[in-house]
Amino acid sequence: MITGASRGLGRALAEQLAARGARVALVAREHGPLADVVATIRAQGGTAHAIAGDIADKAATHRIAGQAQALIGEIGIAIHNASTLGPTPLRLLLDTECEDLAAVLETNLVGPFRLTKVLAGAMVLRGAGVIVHVSSDAAVEPYPRWGTYGASKAAQDHLSRILAAELDGTGVRVLAVDPGEMDTVMHAAAIPDADRATLQRPGDVAARIIDMIEDDGARAASGSRLVAPRWEVRT
Amino acid sequence: MRWNSARSLGDPHELGWWGWLAGAARSEPEVALAADEVDRHALRLVTISRRGDSELALHRFAELPRLLGAGDLVVVNDAATLPASLVGVTAQGEPFELRLTAPVDGGCVDGVLFDDGDWRTRTEHRGPPPAVAVGDRVMIEGKLAARVVAVTGRRVRLAADGGAEVWWSAIYERGKAVQYAHRRDELPLWAVQTAYAGRPWAVEMPSAGRGLTWDVLLGLRKAGVRIATLTHAAGLGATGDAALDRALPLPERYEIPAATADAVAETRAHGGRVIAIGTSVVRALEASGGHAGPGLATLRLDRDYRPRVVDGLVSGLHAPGESHFEMLEAFVPADRLRQALALAARAGLSAHELGDACLIA
Image (tube, chains in turn red, purple):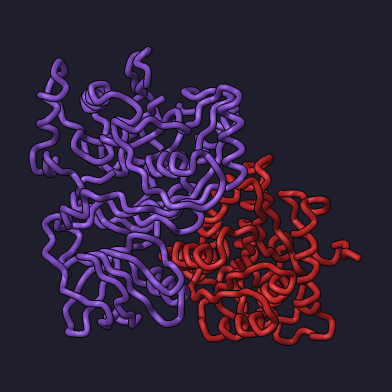
């Protein structure tokens, strides 16, 4: 199951996982763009289902998880990829409305946590599963104007580490991955004047993330925080 | 737990909680079991010895790891509870409630129709649903056009174009958890999920597992107790139709993973106990004989049934006259069950679906 699957890294992850034989449940707020991704995957012989839902909406939690498990069965990999920057252009923290900080935390921290709570239990009893939190270097570096997003990602990183510690020995891995700067709609919203030629393509990053998920923990032990530029690429 | 299927004794809430206890428990004082929802972290447990070789006792549910032992196996039903209550209208514009009796089956659903009254009216007091016939068109939740493909009394089978995906979408966007008439407020879907729920197969919560927080589950493992899963499509507790209720539970789908069948066999070979969390687990394990695979549970648990696979179980508290009480009689004589309920009542335990529990082992 992949959130934020209608574009960018989420879409690339969905397409590549499906190409490797996984049945994928795709989540995003709008049904339209998701339907395009599902059609693409099905045209290539894959199995995909679209689930429209806003992860920031508590009432959507079981709607998303229930449909995903009804349609594709037990969830082996959950990728928390959907996130929001909050209002753009990005603002200084002291110019940030408190409600905007709360909304960013709902989407980037609390919403994924609710989904994890619903999905991880069955993984633990089965003794297998991977939960991936897509992070950012803004979780580590105090970039001015990235306060709400950076704080939400830092919190998610730590939640990821603690969950990994609590689930140690259960067979369920919890990872955080910092994909680095990618050429995406989100990046353009945050840094409109970036030189796109210097940015990674989401498809390349997705391939490396999937290698890390699939290596059974040999290089990506539970609790790890993986940073894109330093990843090994499977050859 | 199934108040609504209470038979000869009627609804306990109407009779005054447990007038039966006065006579039934004989030597016990007349007391009433509470019927409030209990926080899942604060549940209590009455322990009942099957052989009667130890005293009834009260514990915190969280003590379960200590009450079981290394080598025992706990088997849970990992079915998530789906929002099985939907509303619809017939082609003539007559409104009804549809309660699913099973998860979506291809492009079809099976369910029971009720009138358009709300859940605050007890199931057995709801009026009859509008009549439908094979071939009729109905509209579900104002968005899903379906046709009636089978009718047996209140039971219907509905088909829709678009297959399982359109049913699941309508169910999760509009459906509500099946409600309990004695509650003051509506149960949200998240309140009727266990901590390990996976695929949405159950139309009512496998509620005996409600006290299995992750603190308890990981505590069981630490104590050397194995945990295994199965999936069982726990069905409706009541249909509003007396004849149909007498036939409950309907045949229910289950699936037993190979790892669970192996764990059952190993546990029994080494003298450990197989402990079912809830009667849905008992039904699935007994119907399967402990073997792996999918199946349909049709057996009936009652005082004449001798369990062959399951050694003990965790269950909610259920009054004599309820179908669940009869199921528990497969494990322990009615007299001892009544004594346990009397003890629970004196201690203030709750018989709500989301209430306290007993361990029979």
